[in-house]
Structure formats: structure tokens, C-alpha cells
Amino acid sequence: MKRGLIAATGVAAMLVSVAACGSDGDDNKAGADGFKGETLTVWAMDGSAPDGWTKDVKAAFEKKTGAKLKLEIQQWNGIQQKVTTALSESDPPDVLEIGNTQTPSYAQTGGLAELDDLKKSIGADWSESINKSAVYDGKQYAAPWYAANRVVLYNKKIWAEAGIKDTPKTRTEFFKDLDTIEKKTDAEPLYLPGQNWYFFDGLTIGTGADLVKKDGDKWVSNLADPKVAKAMDIYKQYQSFSKAPKDKDEATPQQGEVFAKGKTGAFIGMGWEAGIAIKANPKIEKDIGYFTIPGETAGKPEGVFLGGSNLAVAAGSEKQELAKEFLKIALNDTYEGQLAKEGGVIPNKESLQAQLKGNPAGLAAAPAAATGGTTPLIPNGPRWRTPRTRSRPI
Image 1: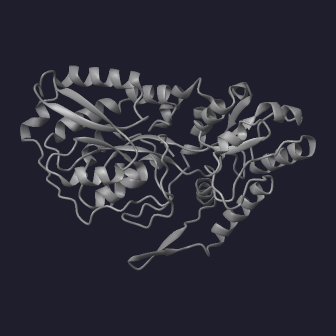
Image 2: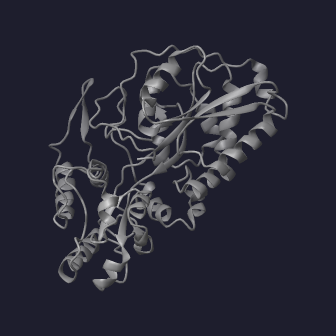
Image 3: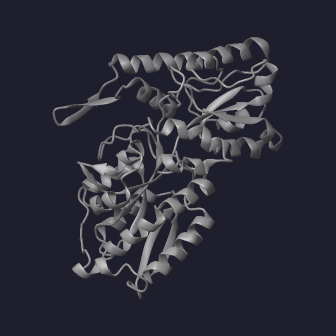
């Protein structure tokens, strides 16, 4: 989901939590027609639920439960306030897609139902790094749906012109390749503006640094940590190969549009940013390649910021058991794998990453997910950056 660098959003001080759980008999209603006559309302964000996945999950849910599924697609503009308001009302949507880094805020204020039982029944092999954001204060408040992270998008034509035959497996090899491009071609080796905070956050994850730390009951800056300094030094090394402005981010201008001109060796971004380049210059599509951001040693990718979404049940929903039935279906291996295949996103289980076959951007992103992370999951914490307005996961 779109979000600022520090995850938490300004949520109302306390949401009204009407945890109207089903009766004891609800557990026995999951069979065909067990929930006949009921309708489950699910909010999903624009761009998250592929058409094929939506059709198949809806059919499976309605066949198993006898209930109807009402999937409402939400737009990004104003969604945080809309969710905050909805969770405080007496008739909220039953299931909501929530940004992974926003989940703790809604959990802290009582807007989300606990899902510890669901985790025990279907989540034993959820990827720990992806599931981390769905846990608050030791309890499960959402289910991990999908993740997304950055990769290297490169111009195969320029790399071939420089005589580079293989993609790098270590950071040192990557720097060597960029140096070769600089010396043997007229291209800019790398486009990396000075304020690509998402890439920098990944570097801090890779060095084991925390941007903030707990001091008593307060969170304070931790930028003096030598591990943060190491991440900064790595960033500077990367940017030494770039002519991008140091006072701009990757969206000003859109780095995909810069790459589309065919004069840039590579940039670090989301796989879907290739679409921006192709829209600006359709001829460049055949020249675009992808590889995992290499780390210090081969076999261990660079740290990455994990964007993505969780699925949560509203605490105020009167259809708790029906909502869980939906999650059991939507998150089973069949449909989670289908989501990865159709949407090109990283699934919530490493065992399902094979579904990304045929999607080079997804295959490049997946290896880094296991050791990726987010910014500190601080409920109601400061927002360090204005959220995006684009309708794709960060």
C-alpha cells in the first residue's frame, strides 16, 4: 500500500470496538449454506486484487459458506481517514486490506479483531518477515496477504555494450559493473537521486541498524548509530555513479521516465516501474532486465524495505466467523499462489514463490523478502514522508 517511510498513521485516539463475535454455534456454520442469507463486505485497494483471483475466490467462498461476497474496491486518495472512520462506526466493513506498516496503529486503537486462532490454523508457515507487521503486542491482528520490494532494473543493451555478460552477485561486483559502464559507454551507470528513502531504509536493514530506538517510553533518533553511518556510506558509493539530483526523490522526476530515454544503465525501484518506462518509450521494453539487489556476500541479498498489505477483520464486525472463513479461503495455497502469479507480488509463504515463474521482476524481488523488513512499527508514530498517490504497492 502507499505509505510514508515511517509506517504509522495518525489514527483517532480510540476507535469504538464493538467486538460482536458470533455465537458458539458459528463454528459449525462453515459448511455449504451454513451462512446462507448473509453478505460479507470486503474492502480491497485499487490494483491489489486481480480479476481472475477475485472471480475464483468469490466463487469458492460462496460455494463453501452459502453467503454472498461483496468486494468493494477502494481508492488510495483519503483511504487512511476512511478506514479510521469506518472502524469507529457500528457497521464497518467485515474484512479490510490494510497496509503492512499501518496495521499496528489500527490494532493499538482497538479497531482490529485478534486472529491468534487463525494464525494457528493456517499460518504456521507464513514468512516471518512478511508476517511481522501483522503482529502487535505479541498478538496476531491481521493476516499477511502479499509483499513487494525493490529490485535493480537495468538496460541490457547498455550492459552488453560495456561487455558485461552476467548480473552481479555481490555489492562489490555491482560497483565494478557500474564503473565499467561509466568507462566504456556514454550512459549514466545508475540513476539514484539523493532522497530515495525506501532504498536507504533497505540499506539500514541490511546493516542491522535501527533509525529510531526506545528511550524509556519514548522513541528517539538513532542516527548516531555506526550501523546507520555504514548504510549512508553504501548509499554514497551508489550515488557516486549517478548524476541524479541530490535534493530529489525517485518520483521527482519519475525515475522510470528517466530510464525510458535509454541513456541510463540501471535504477533501483519496484518492478512495476518498468511500466512507466515502457509507457514513455515502448521500444525500451525488450531491453529491460531485472536482478536482485546484491548484498555484501553472494547468496545474501541486500536488505530491502518490504511494502505490502495485510488482511484484517474489523473488531466491530458482527460476522467474525464468516470473515475468518473468507481469510481461510483467500489465503490458502491455491489462491495465494494465484495472487502471486496474476499480480506479480510476493506471496506470504516462501513455498509459493515458484508461482512467480514467468515474472522476471517478481523472481528478482523474491529472494530478498526473507530478510527484508519495514521501518519501525510504531503505532501513532511520526510520519517522516508524505505518502504516495500512485495506486501500486510500495
